[in-house]
Image (cartoon, rainbow, N blue to C red; front, side):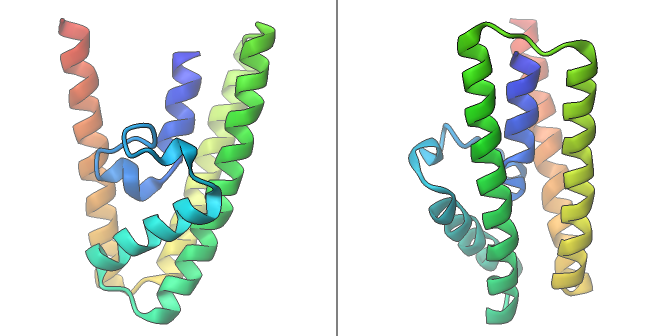
Length: 142
């Protein structure tokens, strides 16, 4: 179940994850998808200097992602309360779906952002993932 939660959190808020914040630590778990998308868009605007057109397109993309994540988390919460653990095949399917959505998001971001903005966005993505890996590694040594 921890892996499932991690998958959901990693996909959620690509930008927030890149900054090393989880939705729980930002108090985002209590926000609706529209609020989450708006906050993420503003953070990306500050980091990438987005124009108004880009902000609108990215907010729509992030709203779609936030709505999807919220629905998935509710599904997982309901299954967890029932005591159902995903099978090996279900875990594979979930991870495969998550990666497909990440690829699709990357393609969309490439369409919306300029080359310089996209490169900066990718650097932010990778730095956040490396930071998260380091945090998990340190926790496992305790």
